[in-house]
Length: 124
Image 1 (cartoon, one colour):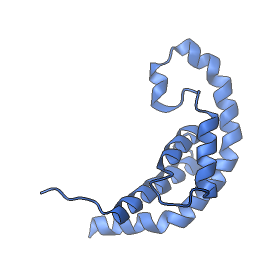
Image 2 (cartoon, rainbow, N blue to C red):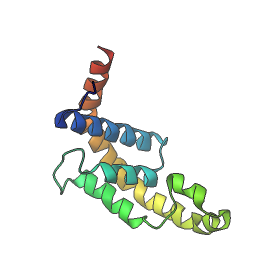
Image 3 (cartoon, helix red, strand yellow):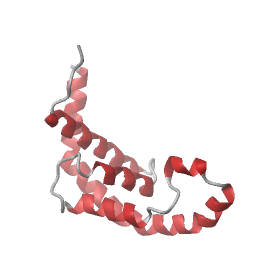
Image 4 (spheres, rainbow, N blue to C red):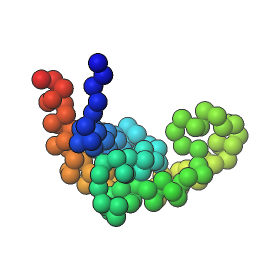
């Protein structure tokens, strides 16, 4: 018998993933550009207003760097092309980091209790 997640459980799970990604960005364990792409993809799953400032920021950052090879896709790019785009990636990172960190801290503050509740449920 398979268990199905309720809509509420799914939203809580998505929010916990958002908290993990945000915490990793702030801690420097996840690149800000890659992290913003992930968070932008979670935008509709975390069930926030479509104009939520934090997720709009992640979506805007993700949109601005859409053409850059970030994350796992880099393995499919030629080293010469990566080297040529590295200054653009560094510039985009410097531009995105301050605004992403503010949004990440906000998301962690809003949703962190969700992640803690999920961990408690999992250990029960």
